[in-house]
Image (cartoon, rainbow, N blue to C red; front, side, top):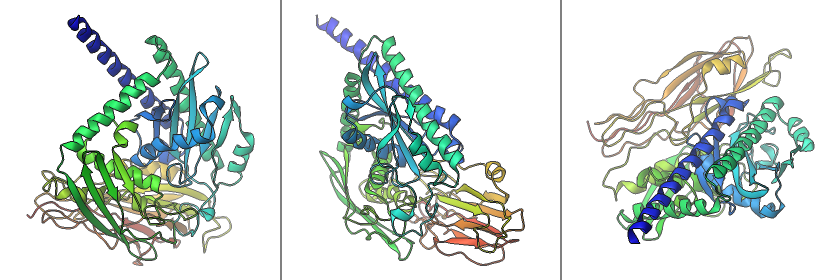
Length: 529
């Protein structure tokens, strides 16, 4: 009898693992549908998106490989906020929920989260959520100059984008009347709807194939197994508390980030006490975004191979000072929140350096540079007939050197996004990229050199000025630090080809006939030469 029970248990384990793998395949298809249908280049080309499946308790069971931690890990908790406002029993087939609430979504107004309930034979079996970054949300645009979220664009509270298959035309009309690129924004929202809808059909077909009528049992297995595996990984670490700090350029004043990481039998707790107060400007990281990148930093070191879901995420807890740079109170400005959020994994690595005896990489560039480029009559010095455009390009620095290898060059860690091809940006604007190449020598020296950043040089092919929003340009005064005796990476620089340096996070005008030159920071080196 024991042999039969053992065989049955082994078979059940195998079936659960197959179902888990199939679930991952479903959300990966979900993400790929969004990639194929999105209008905005930041989603379609750079992969700035996320997709995931949830049980009826709102717990994330699986995420697509395609996506960023800032989207996926914030979305893991965002679905619970939807269910507080729209209980499961009120949802119907054809409903799609939406918000861009920075504190209950993914950290700023540019990211829309959509949630679609999945049904099987009339019974709700789970939910799918997806996120992407839209090109514009009105307000002041992708800048950090606003001093409240009310200036930053249109806020959409939790509501229905579709109700039983009927589109919320009022919401679409308000959106399209308040953004600079209405067709792109509309197209991206419909792409989110489409990818969720495909995923609901795939989930229903999967359960039918295996003769199942609900997802929650598999969900409990996924969550409990992942939680236990994450706890086992944590329990292999030394016990204690370790601290790290990091200086950043900031906006109106330098920023100090501080973290104390405590490893215990119950998990890992990170406390950001001592970090700078919130900024007056839009570089603040809402706690949902801080939680997301803190958890990601921990997981990179402790258990990179364990699936990312509600179970593995709950082993890491985070505390932040109220109204600080890592937990701003509403209505603080937050558009450029990744300036802070994407530095947190590097800060967490610093906490691990001592207990792991130097087994973590040197600091990298961290925050990617989002080049918000615009032109038209609204730019100072432009003629009334100047071509209007509003485009984004991505500048990427170098990663820190690893204990046994060089750092990766022009690699967007921790966001994981790709660069938007220059041909795409040129096709949507009169801009021309004169250069996009490695910034030679930007990686810190050491036994293993830091990764190199890139250099981008841009001009307007028309005799007209254009604007550059430097909201996210960090590490121009505080370089990525080397580790274990390695040298620091080079700081970033932004200047005009004519020689003028653009020092801050403001929006600047590149005069007609001049060119913008942006040099990304490099990663720190590891070990002495």
